[in-house]
Amino acid sequence: MQARMQNPAVVIPEAMPAILDVIKAVQKGGVPETTLELVHLRASQINGCSYCVVGGALKAKKDGESDERLHAVAAWREAPFFTDAERAALALAEAATRLADRADPVPDAIWDEAARHYDEPQLAALTLMIGVTNLFNRLNVTTQQVAGGTW
Image 1 (cartoon, rainbow, N blue to C red):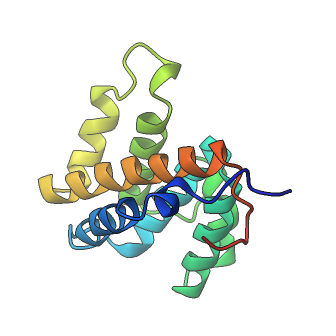
Image 2: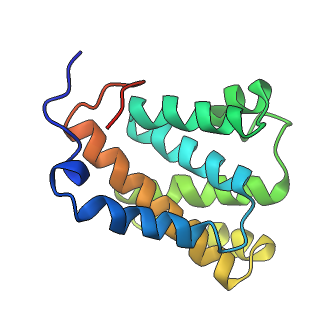
């Protein structure tokens, strides 16, 4: 497989620093880095972004995440490895990624469960992380970025 072109955020050089600044801000939002990595991985799995799935899993592993949890992210509802807060974040990531799948894409029940575990700045960080992940997924899938490749 070969990429159709470089990542658009590289082709337009002003784009990447702006996106990375959002990620830096997200990391200051008070959500554990492991949770942000799980959210990134799950949204990337849903979107079929092999570049982000591989890169996200490798980063999470490097940061100390267990193989057991990484292998179970796609089946987080059935796997015993996640906290209630992580489950709420993963449910929010799924709902916010699958916007077209239902009339009420992010139902109050999903939002309220996330709000039980995260305060407003943390909810903002989670929502931004989900959005940035979806942005990267769409850039990478559209241009067929190769998993394991570099930008």
